[in-house]
Length: 122
Image 1 (cartoon, rainbow, N blue to C red):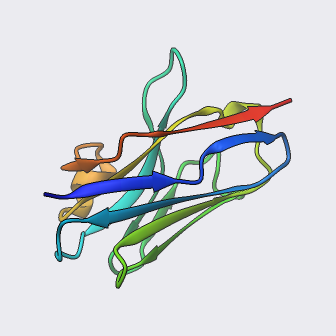
Image 2: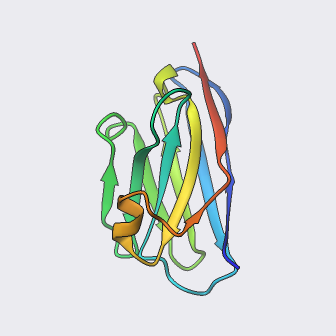
């Protein structure tokens, strides 16, 4: 059974940095895409960033110049390096993965992590 295990969330001051990690276990399949979603209180879940097995990346406009997504296909792990964090980045961040890259992009990934809290203090 596939599990996505996230780490790296926490409390950080505005302007600081965090790196989120998500490791997939329980499958030797190569995911078509892995990515990160986030949901803040009272807001809809939104795609933050995604990356395909071939290295194609997508970013939300609000994070494009501050966040970097990367992937280690051999380890089936995806990372999100977050810099210049703002209070607006405060949310629960969820890792997502699927054999279908389109499923990840559309928020219909077959596998999800349990979420990790990122809190940016002013």
